Length: 612
Picture 1 (cartoon, rainbow, N blue to C red):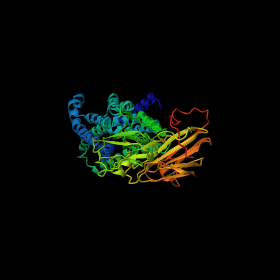
Picture 2 (cartoon, one colour; picture 1 turned 60 degrees about the horizontal axis):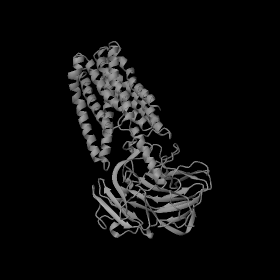
Picture 3 (tube, rainbow, N blue to C red; picture 1 turned 90 degrees about the vertical axis):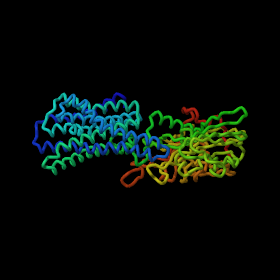
Picture 4 (tube, rainbow, N blue to C red; picture 1 turned 30 degrees about the vertical axis):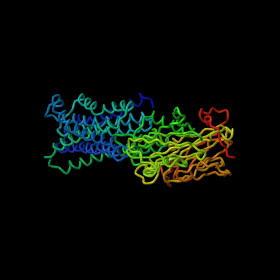
């Protein structure tokens, strides 16, 4: 979808507010009917108030509950409180100083202007949601949001003219257009802003002000009918208005849910603000927003890890190879529309590949920017006891803001594929992303057989309040974002597999091939084992080798099939619903030798040790 198209759609979504405004041109009704129509508008506004405050509160509560996001949550809570107060009290000041100066103070028109102002703030957030969806590359979701918001805004127009209808007045066409610009115009403005720049802080502040403003105008409208004799009838109109507001929202929500269930629609986007709970997929762990560029950068990092592009060390004057790992909290996209506040090393999950060679003296400087203490354990490496990363035994935990330097010399015992990971609050911190792969090469290659080395590190996350691991990743990404491997036909391929799941075992299977398991936990097998599945318990590693002599796109996945779906509306299958692929699924694409293969697929200068 082109930028001009989404801006035009944002204009249309706001312009539908005009559909409800012409009621303000109708001739006078009797008193009871006028009051009932006014209370119908109140019901719509009450629904909007409940929904707005829910939308403003949800990211605040999520941030307060998420580890490492307390400061963000407190800032959002402050914006929520201040914004609501400004919207409620500020509208009174706005009315007294500006609206009364422009409109007769005794006229119901002033209340319509106040309602339009509150709805305009709300519609600004709707526009931000449309723009954010476009900015994140989710054009399908942006279109669905436009349709849903357009439907919703049509009922808001009647809410604006409710006070005039109640008093039996009529509005000029010029006034109606001005009210439409105040109430609907911000949808267009928000679309433009959201497509260029997004902020959860701005969204919460705008929604909170809208909620405060609407609460004030609801109070004013209810005060106008307190002496109406047929109270039961007009209160029924309030209930009907609420149902109308909810009904239009329900129809729009179903559109988003239908779009989300379509694999190509990308409609499970993470959006803060706006009307629809499904937009946030909150119950399935959708979290902090990332720009399209940030998601693309994370996909590049996953591709780098697949092709064993290791972290470059600083070589000191005395020959020591120094690596720096910084543990911190950052947003990480798991699969389309779902992200988490991950805990990881150097801003990526898994942490960067560390690659050592026998005989090197290494120094790993670990900075802790987490809200908890942590350590690093070098799994499978016989390091000196003081460097083993066991808190309270071999070292004091690295406190938040602290630094620890691990030092050891790489020995032949360490050769192979390994894992480094936290050893504090292990189950939680591992499932937040504090782990990474490690490869130790011999001092000199044992053979001269060149081939393709590739690495898949299996990770797990607990999202949506689950007490069990329910999202599974390959190099930090769940299908359909897990990186695929492309190899030329005839190449010798080594797949290094690392299981960084804190709890789950995985049974990895490659279609189209019988591979040979040549190493387990970094230790070469005297006799390679021919197999088409390999079992990996938590923290175990395996090296498997095959010759890519069967062309085609071959599925590589876990054969515990619950690990090949993503949680959410398209998750578990049933007799009525076909589950979509997710989790531990990717493909090995064997192409003709003459086909172009991206640079980096051949193991960059590394010679394979083929343990035949």
